[in-house]
Image 1: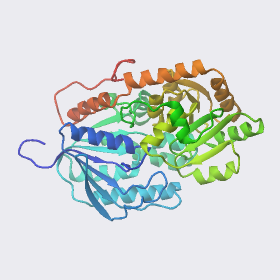
Image 2 (image 1 turned 180 degrees about the vertical axis):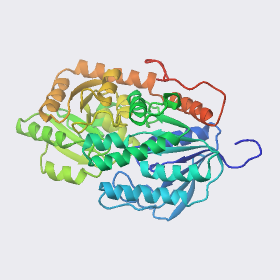
Image 3 (image 1 turned 90 degrees about the vertical axis):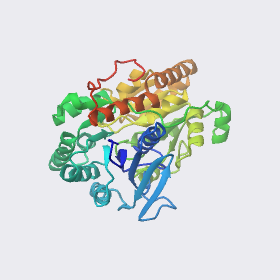
Image 4 (image 1 turned 180 degrees about the horizontal axis):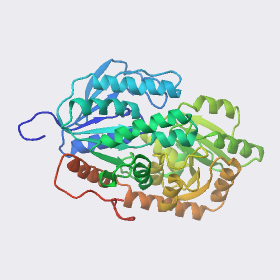
Length: 428
C-alpha cells in the first residue's frame, strides 16, 4: 500500500475460486496465492463454491464466511444459484454476487482485479468503483468474451447480443488495464470493443497442477480400472453448451456400432451433463465420472491414450479451453474437434501437441483417435511436444511475473506498457 494508508495491495473479485476444479477458479486461486507468497497483501471476494454442478458445495452454506487461504484473506458470500442455469438464471446469479460485493465494506487497495466471467458481476462492481472509488485503478482479466460467446453459440438474439456487447464495452473501456489470455482475445478486444491496444496485456493461462513427477502410466491405468487393450479418450472439464459434446456422444455411438476399441471417458460436471448422459444411454463405449481430486485427475490424464478438446460448431474466438494447460502436462496427445480457424486450433497447432479435426463431425473425431492409437510413436512425440510447450511458455512463475508488471503499471509505476512476448519466449 501507499505509505500512510492501510488496506491491501491487491483486491480480487472472482465468481469462481477453489475448491472449484475448473473454469476460472484454478487461475484466480493460483494467482492470489502466488502473489501472497511473494509478500503482497491480497484479499479475494468470492461466492460460496457452486461450479460446475450449480449446487453449493457441502459444508459451504454460510451467508458470509472468512478464512485464510495460504495467506490470502478470502471472504465468501452466498449468492443465488439456480437449479437450471438458463441464460436468464445465470444473469440473475451473477448479478446477485456482484450486488453482495457492492453492498459490502471495501478495504482500500492499490489495485482491484476483476475477473470476467462473470461479466455482469464485474459490471456491477465496476459501477461502484467508477462512482465511489475512482482513485483506485481497476484491472479486468478476461477469460471469456461474452459477446463473442453469444454470437458463436447462438445463445441470444440480436438484441441480447447488442446489450451484452454494450455492457462488455463499458466495462473494458473503464478498466485501467485489460488482461487477455491469448493474442486472439487481445485482437478481438481491440477490434470489437475499440479498446486502446496500449492498455491491453497478454498473460497466458498456466496449468493448475503442481510441478511433480508424473505417475507411472501402467500403474495410473490400473488405478483408473481401464483395460490394457482399450483405447481411452478422456474429455476433462466443464460439460456445457459451448463444448458441443453431442459430437462425442455421436463418436461413441459409432465406436460401439463398429466395435472399435475406443472408449470415451467424460470427467467432470456441467449444466449439460445430465442431458448428455441421457443421450448416451447405455452405450458401453462412453462413461461419465465425476470431478476428480488432483491426484486422480493426474492419473486420468496420464493413463489416457488420447485427450479430447471439443467445441460446438461455430465457436472460434470466444475462448481458449483451460483444460489444454493441464493436458500439456501429461505427455499424452490431444485430439481437438474444433473450428479449424479458431483460437483453440491455433493453440493445439502452436504447441505441436496434437491434431485438429472439424467440430461437429463425430466420424472424423473417432477416426483421428483410432489413427493415433495405431501410431504409438507419433502419439508419444505429440505428448512430448505438449510437455515442452508447457515448460517453455505456460509456467505459472512466468505468468505471475507478468501479472506483477501489469499491476505495477495499473498502480502508476513508471514503466513502458507490456508488449506480448515474442513467440517461443519463456513468458509467451
